Image (cartoon, rainbow, N blue to C red; front, side, top):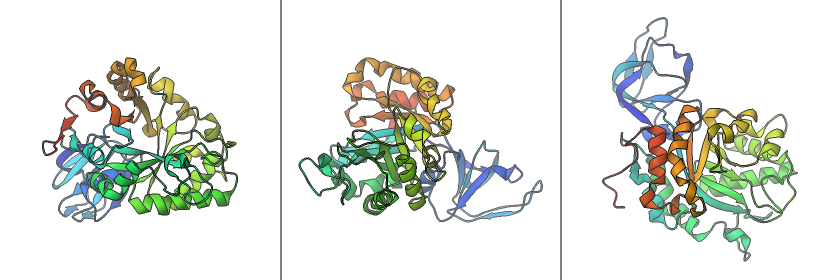
Length: 371
């Protein structure tokens, strides 16, 4: 959601504050943007550059805020003048999948800005890690072919070890790792044992998310040669949610009725996901491609429509802008571009998507970047 910044305003002291979700101290505006992304119901927040005192008004209590406080709300803001604060209001979300060729290409993601100077890309999912073994490390480079104990392909490992993830996060960009099945008997939909699911979730937390400072895990449940069941994904995502309550769990959405229809200990897949990015790419608008997931239990503000820069879809590229406009009018959360690294620069696929989602002029190059 490229954010819209409104300077020198905060929630009016006399407004109805029943839509207050939470307050976080000792943060930065960039961290607050990433915090807000964890909860799709957060639609705006104000950030205190200086301390602020709000007098009791209309039956509301007095409120005291310190420098570095971020205060998060759902619904629509009711602004009041506040020279100490800025308010950030959610716009449509912009997501990319990238298999970075090198560290510099990954760092360049932060070079694109909205008209207000904020990141034009909200979420980056690094594509990807391969779940290819039932023994540690569960992720194996190149689908464990040839057999290896390296957990990730060299290009991805180089990015994760370079500090580039922190550079993007410090700009307010959320960074995930997509984990795919790796042409093996194991997979996201193949868990039958709670212990196995717990061990895998603990591995993702300790050896992937915590180690590399990521914002969460994106699930791509394809390519396993094992036997799927409808309990597996509800189980493993419930355990992940318990282990990583402040991280994002998202899913690449494609032909998913089975896992969304299952449950484990009263928990469903839809309840455990922050977001889902739909991956049929073309051949229909948001309602035809995303409405099924609403019926599965997700909300429109969690659903993002996918496009692809793969050359096989070249004939469909002119539809990116018009269909992105439909995302807005039909009330879904945003757009996703798969294969971001291979988009022909001259065609401006991301520019068309972001400008259609958030208005013309919201895809710009930071003049301090040398692209």
